[in-house]
Amino acid sequence: MDGSLSSTPRRRRGNGPTARAVGHAPARPAPHRGDHTARHTRETPLAREHAAIVAFDAARYTATIALARSPDVALPDVPVSRAIPAALLVPGAAAAVLFFDRYDPSDAMVVGVH
Image (cartoon, rainbow, N blue to C red; front, top):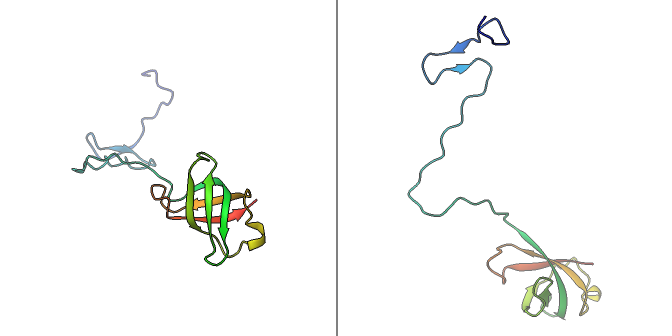
């Protein structure tokens, strides 16, 4: 014996360096080598934030909000979900805000009040 645990050699499919053991998944292909310089990143398409209602405009159903992570900055005219009753949208109420594009603060919506 050659010191291996099994006395029977593993069967292999094919010959040469690309041969693989029977029953195993094929090797993964190498990642593509595009000519772009940007790194591949995995971003969540939506970003959630905690905020406070600063003001609410019932006629347009928009709110001015202050994000919890930067309370000194107010974001005006953020659309509010019509599923939220206007009586709950009082100044100082805690809100959940959904950003559809994390780099564009005007592309947000108040989706809940708690």
